[in-house]
Image (tube, rainbow, N blue to C red):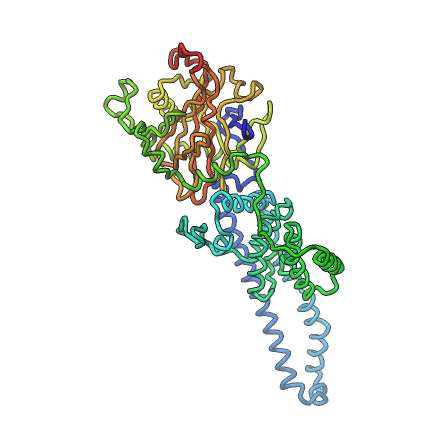
Length: 541
């Protein structure tokens, strides 16, 4: 095949409640929403700390005023003042006791320790380093897939370049600008992965923002202007821009003139520039993907966000009211939209109600865990699938059974376990996505066969929520993408009638740009469908 063969896989642990990992918060927006409550408590704790510190400082200010007044008024005539034994006593007492209590007070330490204890109590609920790295990688993923300008992202805008000018692709209702330290951390994540294409862009913004503040340091920051200059200089060197690396290193020496490592780098860069023939910089070039050969098509389809008018002008595609010859659908047929004939892909509008979707999400929330994919005979978490998922039995709640019945009516297939998998509910994280993959097994050792029910013959995916931007389902070889349509469901056949995989079903979940994407997957297997989807007399079909 022309690209890596990955496939979605089920987690064969069918219990309803699965404990979620305390890490990997970036893989699900459910966890991100919980973090707001965590920070609200920390804000309250910090307010309490500030109140106590202000009271302490007010006591110190009062002591300072009292002693200053004594030196301004009472001690003008020191001999006369000291002749009074009461004055002499209070002076000795202050110097031996009161100043000691003020200078060596434990009150400030007690306040800071109380704040730290409050913070540490929340440790299990706090993001880990992996979450920070995952969130940074998500920003870079969105930058790449949707061709976003980093300079615009930093200002809180989602813009691409059209005809040489920045163009909004989406205007979010709520946004924030990024700080120099924010950009430094994103650039540092790329830098540590030796991804200098991204580190240069994000560190350039970091340096510019730090310069704008005069290089002033804030206690909450991890990075400084010097740190950003240091990382950016080396990133430029690694991308071949030696002259830029030299100028940045020389700027860094203004702040740290005795830094021996930087001094050596300056000497090295100067020698390289003398030895090399002058040539114009060709600018940054995005590295080619070693694992995703369909990257260009995938990203182009994601950028259209389900809008391909030439595709949908195909006269063989249609919309209708569909009954599938099922008596239960005669009075209320499904609103069917045929999106593609090869592969056969249809969208059923208003498949699920708002109340049913909320019930499914509520059932799934406590059971969400990091989504996995097949890795040989085992399962693994991977960067090309960012989401959390849970599995719901049809006995978990009446709504799950109702959905199974509805799927059976529309598809005409046997969806009883083990002829189909339990309902998988998925919530995507920051920039959540799933790169091009097949739902059916492409290896005989795949965990899909653990059900002893054959391969996945069909996929039925329900959109439990809407998204503001992004999140389309892109069919790579079929060259179209379907946008997220709230309450709708999308269906396609994974296998030909002869049991062979349909490689035209290679598809991807595009990164969510803005929004909280929830879907529910029902994977239906070959066995049990003998009288529901019969084999053709043509062995090639």
